[in-house]
Amino acid sequence: MSGFSPDEPRAEVRVSPNFGPRRDTLKPDMIVLHYTGMGTGAGAEAWLCDPASEVSSHYLVHEDGQIVQMVRESDRAWHAGKSSWFGATDINSRSVGIEIVNPGHSLGYPAFPKRQIDAVIALCAGIAKRHSIAAERVLAHSDVAPGRKIDPGEKFPWRALFAAGVGHLVAAAPVRRGAALNPGDAGPDVEALQSMLALYGYGVEITGSFDKQTEIVVEAFQRHFRPRKVDGAADGSTMRTLRRLLDSIRP
Image (cartoon, rainbow, N blue to C red; front, side):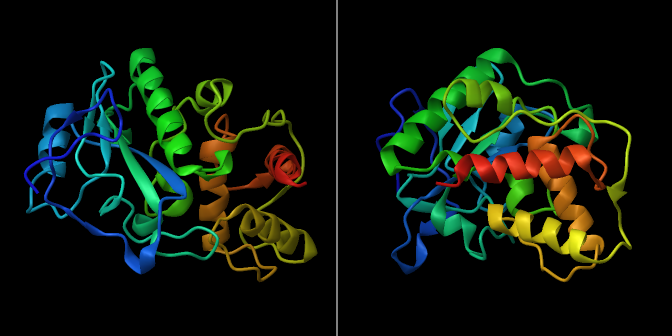
């Protein structure tokens, strides 16, 4: 493919060879947000278009708000890797991936510039409209690949997106001292925690035992929905925020 017309009118096109057809006639019903985790946006853009990398995304958004489309929305980009949501494991076939230029945690993790976030908001809104994507299916890479990925991270301004009508959020319950569920705990309270996380979509086994995977998923939840304190312990704030989130989508 030598070129294509962008799905997003404001995007520039730079074609990546790293894509294929969506499998099993799947169509996009999710948006997955990433950060690039590289030193420069130019380097990240080049890597996503390098056949040797075997990775790509549909879009990349630079710090100045420039949007680059590398894979058509109708095609399957290689951005999510091993991941799952609501039990579905081929996230690449059912999502549109957006890489947001930011060096990430290992390289200082600066704040995301406003003009970059404004561009991400406009891009997400357009994708969601084109594919009728529900607000609660605008997700972080860390949501669909907890433990393996932590991007776009706790500094990502989900609140700004939600205020602009993109994504799903509730007011996080205040962090206070008190009892919490921790690794090693077991019983009906742990089972309830795991059940609520699974009801929202996270890949967690309901065992009643607070194992390592449960801790990792709690961290992923906190990173997105309660970023003030990301520690993997299910304190009262985490539990109340999770209940609010589920209540907000129940009919």
